[in-house]
Length: 109
Image 1 (tube, one colour):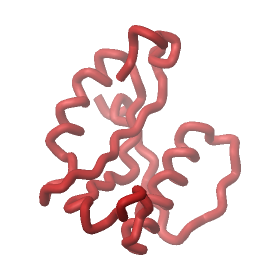
Image 2 (image 1 turned 180 degrees about the horizontal axis):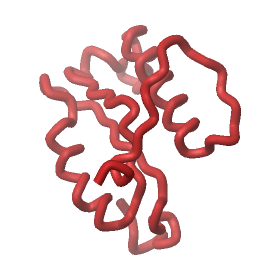
Image 3 (image 1 turned 120 degrees about the vertical axis):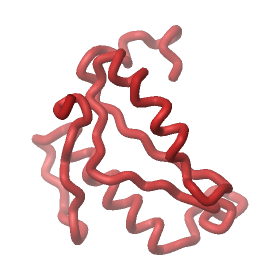
Image 4 (image 1 turned 90 degrees about the horizontal axis):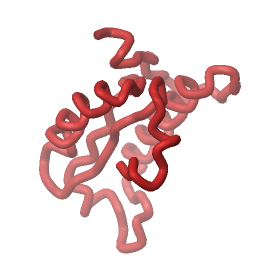
């Protein structure tokens, strides 16, 4: 997070999402969990309609960063679509199969 140079981007109730990829077997679950208190302190609304943890990223992306695993590509497509619907609920989005539930972390705590 670069809050010093762009403080307006991190206003209260800003909708955010966590996702990541790692070379290990657990995706980025530990680093994502570490961010939760900071996001809550900032007053953001984190979305947990899905949690793509891309493990063994070296097998999912090519040298140029393109996704080579079709299952991961579809998972990420649905994840991003769900986050867009959560962030801007007035924009109609095409349905892409089973949709994750929209849920904000701060709405539950």
